[in-house]
Length: 64
Image 1: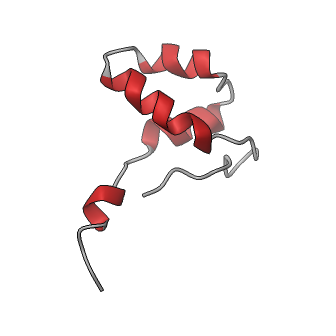
Image 2: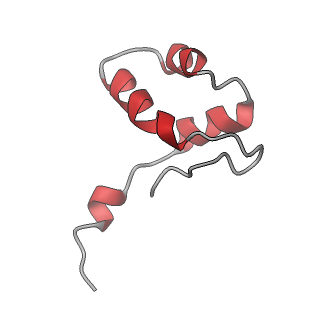
């Protein structure tokens, strides 16, 4: 739903990079190149970005 602030495996702060990653991939850049330029070298951090599904907008439609 929401990208974690830190990588769950290694503890590296990654939350601040999500918007930059999402914008650049939406413009058509290769995800590998974007992750390299953002400094995400560990496979645990990379998999966090590559497998994340942003559902916050869909869930925000429902009220309690």
